[in-house]
Image 1: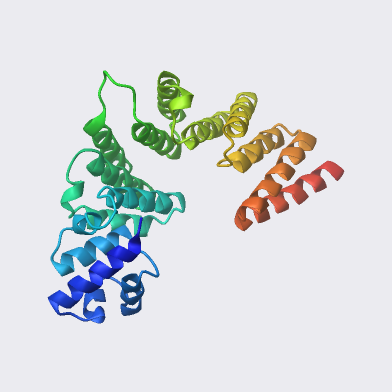
Image 2: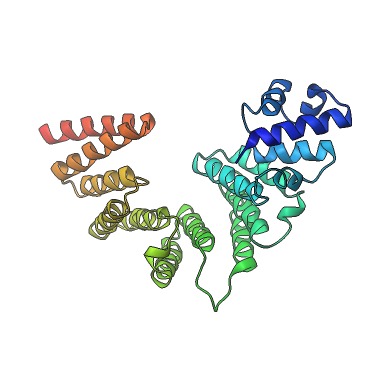
Length: 297
């Protein structure tokens, strides 16, 4: 996407409207950020662009109908940014973005409204602890697109994974496994080769493995992790590989099999280090030292 074109258009419109960079920035961001956007140094977040468009008196799609920039890029950018905030557990920023887009006509129906319901539900569950409302929102989100005559879409699979995760949080493992099994069946029906987001299967296997561990089914959990590792290697993607290795080690630790536990944890440490995930690496280094002490005692 050529964001320099968007920056130039923002500057042109601002000058036509007759307001300064500071006035445009008010309530949205800093004047310095507007300056950098107009110069094409950085691109605006989807939320900022929506707020800027409102202040300049144009529909946000105006910026995606110029030059060679596709109109749908705004929707994709919103989804991308929400995904990143969700992964990083930055729920306050996530709900702020959802609340802005709720006023955007582009998000009044179909898959776009579903996207907002999904992320609003995550905020309600994780932050507000309003579990019943969160589950109701997710079911509402699914209802928007689910068709009994069609296989689940990847978005619908992700929402089912989220529902399963909610039930894990409520310690209702039976219902969690039921939703995870629905995702597994959906992947089987669609065919793994048709998955554009390979991480869906990885997350399914890892999340199910964690539930099996909580139920004391360590061997089954390890089998799911190994299946996940094989999947990651076959598809040549790293997402979840470190977590899967650690979880195998954790299962072995719970079974008091220290040597194999150490082997998998050491591999996991190397992977988290390669990924630059210092938080997890540091935790596992401490875990490794703890297991060494246990083995020597």
